[in-house]
Length: 125
Image (cartoon, rainbow, N blue to C red; front, top):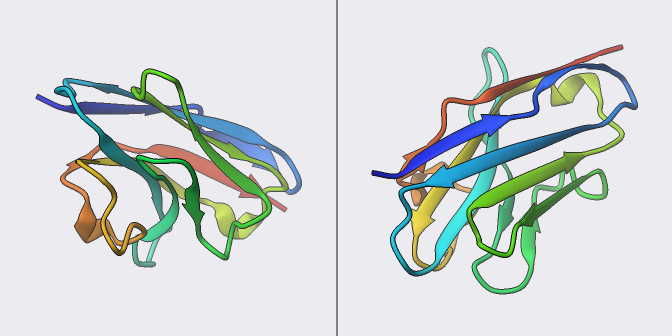
């Protein structure tokens, strides 16, 4: 059974940094597409960044240049380095995973089968 556990959330001031981690277990052999999403109160879930199964990543325009997604060599831990945080980045951040290569719409939540419980990020002005 696949399990995703996020950590690293917290409260910071505007301009601060946080590093989120997502530890995956239960993966069978093969590739998994992994991504970060977020959801703020009263807003729809938003795709933040995707670490492609091959080289490269897809990053939402709203965080481009500030957030960096990475993955360990074993492919079981996903990271999100968040710099220059803004109040509008406040949300519950989720890790998501899908067996196989990333789909054609990797920032869409519908592409992912497995989800973590989330970690809260709060940015104060």
